[in-house]
Each structure stands twice: as structure tokens, then as C-alpha cells.
Length: 99
Image 1 (tube, rainbow, N blue to C red):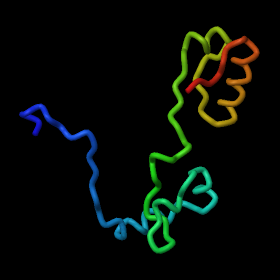
Image 2: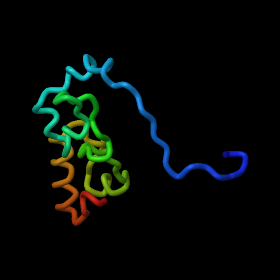
Image 3: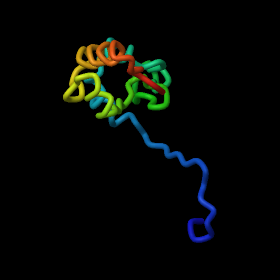
Image 4: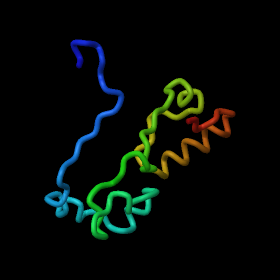
């Protein structure tokens, strides 16, 4: 297919997730509340995967020039620092978050 220049638009794979059950034991129900639909990855009432298309934890990118303009010298390392930096950006007239 690749040689002909006709690649698939979508690919998917299946795997038996039951052997991974013990690896997911570290996720507590409280931690799973960060996800919109943890039951979407459940089998028999046990969460076997976290659906990445609905997870609410995102990568955060920042603009060094805007941070410098607001007097912020380093990117935040914690959520509390992120909120503090966002407030500081806002006081300088800079929109802290965009999507």
C-alpha cells in the first residue's frame, strides 16, 4: 500500500489487555476522576485502559517571550505554579491559556 501511495486513513489494533490488569492497580478511583469516561476502558467492571481521546490531562506549551514580559523566569513545575503564572500573565494583559 505504501509503495502505491495509498496509505490507510485510520489504523487500529487489538490486544488482550487482561495481562496488564496488575499494572493498572496503581490508579485509584480518585485519580480516575480526572478522566471524562474511565468506564470506556472497562471490562467486567475493571478499568483496563484509560481512553486517551477523552483524557483531560493535556500537554502545556508556553511562550518564553510572554513569560519574560510578565517577569516569569522559568516554566511552572506544579499545578499551583501554573495557576500563579497564569494569574501573573493575566495582570500583564496577556491571555494565559489558548486552545
